[in-house]
Image (cartoon, rainbow, N blue to C red):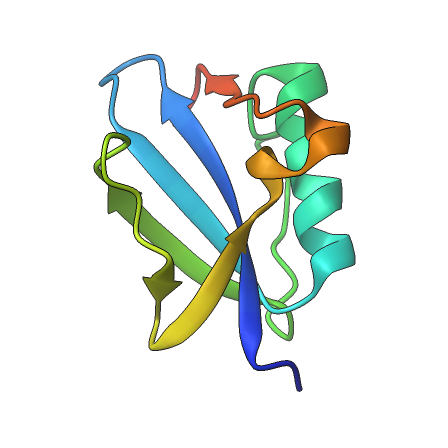
Length: 92
């Protein structure tokens, strides 16, 4: 297992609260980022893989944590290919 987790930051359009979804695999985190960035919602029938999904955590977007669930995290949003975007989610 890696010594770090991968986080996808997103903003709830109902509450304006920023949250992160944390994954143990980079590929799962990238897939989830792409899902939110392209669809602006989490599909109702979406099932998180229990082996790779660590959890959700609300954050202060002005002072993002770089540790969550007792592990260093890397934000998928900050990767150059993702353009430092924070997807807006309408059903969270």
